[in-house]
Image (tube, rainbow, N blue to C red; front, side, top):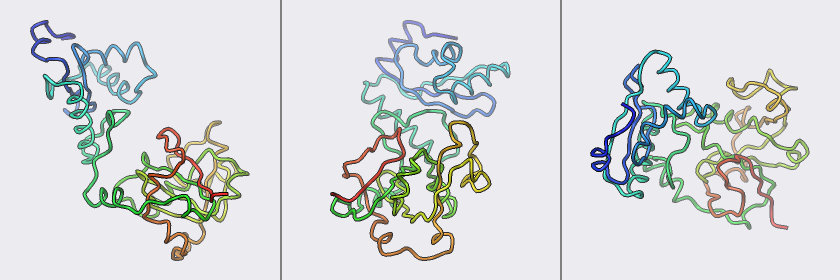
Length: 265
């Protein structure tokens, strides 16, 4: 089946939410919002648009290679566009939070924030917000939303913050502190003692998943000797830790994990 009948289209209404299921394990791998025959179009995309939404399309390709068909379900129908956006985002958030099923969706959903425990929600949205006057040091801000995982141990967390990043070798010489930021909350503060170029220190890379290529070999990572020696946070680290940068005037683009905070001139 590759399309609905006109009678079914009338029954679906203006918008619906659907899921794509991998028949090899009977698990949903994609949640989407659609109208008319959108639910059937992903398999055609796998032939015509191989560079878009690569993980979803890779899964579809593997299913086809196994001689199977993608299973499709309609989760809810007869929705307005705003209802469909909300339902899609809510389902993606729940699946991603529970972690039992790994979705291939590139984004969480329209105007969506991820699902949070009540404790995390309070930490993020109830945090004291920094102002420009609070910034007394030259700071590199690293947004780790995509690397952050619940229940990470502190060393894995440290490694996710410290590199590797596309930053200027000259500019990082000025940096006094590094913030690890998750959803605008400062969840880590480090004091870098040395920066390394990846290709010059390939035996010390912070994470095993880092593969050196011409694009990554000149990126940098840092070491905080105080942290590695088990020293407690200094008073500046203690001041910044746990506060929010939500209202700071800086680049908060999700596409760029790096930005800088310097004291007012």
